Image (cartoon, rainbow, N blue to C red; front, top):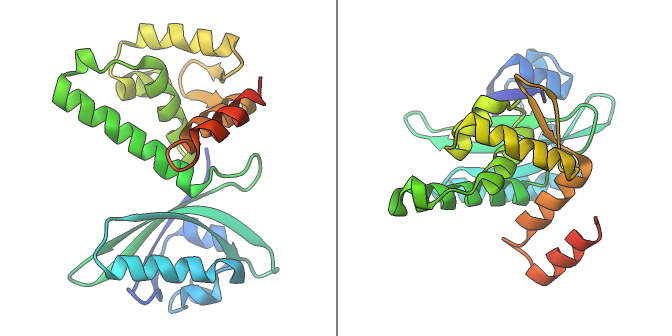
Length: 225
């Protein structure tokens, strides 16, 4: 499971509160973080991206998702996916962060957002047309697993079935098929369903069509076969 952290900051980006997860991300103590501007702990390459996020939030937009790199005391950087929400009374920004210490890189923020959009489209279709006309076991399963990995959560059979809104026995059959195709790993019956490297590449090729050229995404997908 990926580590996660939370922090509260002013609308100008000054950190007011940080949990232990956030301190672990930065490799810093609380007294080295509280009262500090985001500019002092953000990789210089991502300062413009952070400033743009603050400007959007000031306009009263919906929660923002982005990926940025944080500086650690030894000069190294660590990438994290962020979900930032603005709350009023008092005016504060609440950030939830997910990152990887080791292993494969975090999914790009735009593809994370694309997966959330696809999940929302499916939920809306179910509301409008009924769950019985909106069954997509493979698509729902893959998106659910991808989002779990992007957000630092483990996902098991029960969670996958609930996400897809189909019986666990059906999910088990699809998992076996996707394992045979080299898309999924399922080491523990309880809580350990993951995309293989090949499966991750294919899901991200699919998600890329939300923002990019479908033809380019198909070419990328074919390169993994």
